[in-house]
Structures are given as structure tokens and as C-alpha cells.
Length: 188
Image (cartoon, rainbow, N blue to C red; front, top):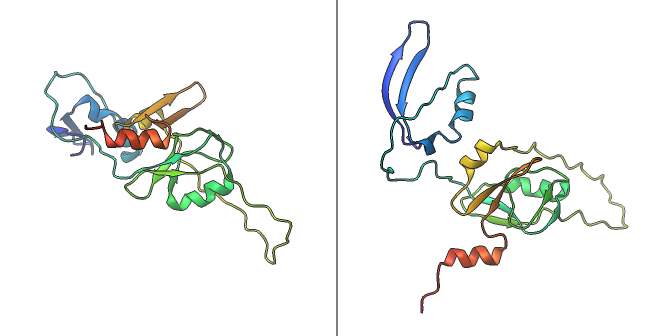
């Protein structure tokens, strides 16, 4: 599978349970414990122990299919902007969350990375609308644990851990730096 595991043994115990023995790289285990608990509704038992050192297997483990939504500025995220961004993908932040340029604020619904503005509020006018303003209701955001964040990141991303939060960011914070790094070194 995508985690590069090999099934070594399968033993039913006669009580409706099955013991599965796998040989899996340590990198393939990152993030699996949470996924396993969700798959088994918390009833599964997972035990891991070191077997041996081995050569790296070809192919990427758990390569992400979707791009990310990246903040283009620093400040507090605004509900109106987040409401509009909900159509672009799933968000990791809610209203009032402090963000900075280069911080990943969600998963894009497409395969490319998208730099977005989550700081703009609604334009206020002095005119009364003929209809009533609809309330901006936000879909609950995804809050990632440290293990989920480590499983989520790509090679050009970092996990930032503070006592109050776990954030994911791009290695290069500004969009110009990301474009420059994407081009690679200059050739003369």
C-alpha cells in the first residue's frame, strides 16, 4: 500500500478478532495510529517494535494529492474572508486566529498551492440593503495534532510547535521566495 507495509502473518483468534503482523518502515507509521483508531472506532490494538535497519524503498510514502491554501499577510483571520475561502478547500483556522505570511491555513480542493487573503473584511457602506445580510456560518475547521501535522507536510513545508498551537508553514514564507526556490539554481 501507500505506507510500504508487508503483511507477514494473519491469525484469527476464534473470538471475532484477527491479529495482523506487518513489516513497515517507521516513516510509514507516522500518522497511522490516529487513522487506525478511526478505522477501528477505537477498538483496535496497535503495537510496534523495531525490527531492523533496511534500505529505503523506492516511491514516496503517503504523497499528498491536494495543494494547500497559504496566507499572504499577517494579522487576524476574518470570518467574512474565511467564509469565501471555504469554497476553495478545508480550513485549519477559525475566525480571530493570528496568521502570518507563508502560514498554511487549509487544504486546497485542487492539486496546486494557492496564496489567499484571509484578512479582508466585508466592505461597509452607508447604504441600506433591500434584503437582510445573511449570517456568515463557517464550517468547523480541522485542528491537527502533532502526528497528523507531521504526516501532512511535504518537503517544502515545516511544522511549528508552540505551547499554545501547532502550525504548518512553507519553508519559504514570501511568495517571491517560494517561486525562486521552485525554479531551482540559476544556470549561466
